[in-house]
Image 1 (cartoon, helix red, strand yellow):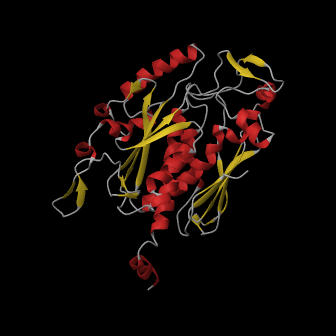
Image 2: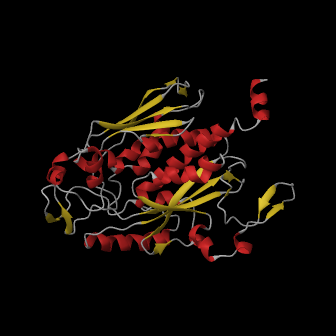
Image 3: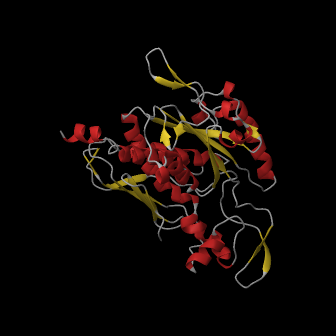
Length: 366
């Protein structure tokens, strides 16, 4: 299967299926000398681990990570880093009946059309469990960014029609809210909404907002490898994400040029600043030094217990009720996945930008 490798210099390859022996990632291009422990990776994996709230799948997995290669005496060696998380709680029998039909909203049909054969247990490679490898790689990327004073923070902006009020937001609340919302009042309202959806055997979607702070200006490759283009690819590669916008986003279509243009100024220290950030921190595909801000739309969980129409391989129209253990909402567990893919992309773009000036090359080699 192609398409499981992402990045140019800082490159990740994820592998494994939902009901296979394990899930993992190989990272190539990580520099030597980075302090890296399994505990550092586990902190990130715990944020996407199932079974922690009633709004996540009841599948109980410890998601314990093991670093197989690429470190020595708690530091990276510069060689490929391989990590594995073993699957311990898969119930493949829950999925035996779907081998002959296609679940609405899932990749069952398209995988069959592409490969002529599919692992139907939990969706196989198309399962959200594939994101374990992404999050493990993102933890490594975040450790690199921390050395540079760059921080990535994502959170749930909205669930259904319930949206946060920025005046009530506190970053500390993200880890306190079961829905990863920085506004606890909005979180309580969204929890009530989800309780209703669960009673109705239905699911909900939402929006994840991500902010990158401390980003230097000048990072990004013009034309095809623009910073926002690569971020968009990274975020849209997350299975449940259906849209992305930067800065003012689609609202910019309702504005005029005088309002969307971000005015430049020098501050008292002669640093370049912008009076607004409608561009979301990226101009011409290159970072402008302000915060990078984007939002990702996450669809409702497609696995719901309501009766739905679909087809089977025998050419019949049928009705199905999806069985198994599923999240009533994907958004909260996807927050750390968005952070991870953002961190991986930014590290890769930083490494690519190191060769954009002769001065950088001369400084390094002379």
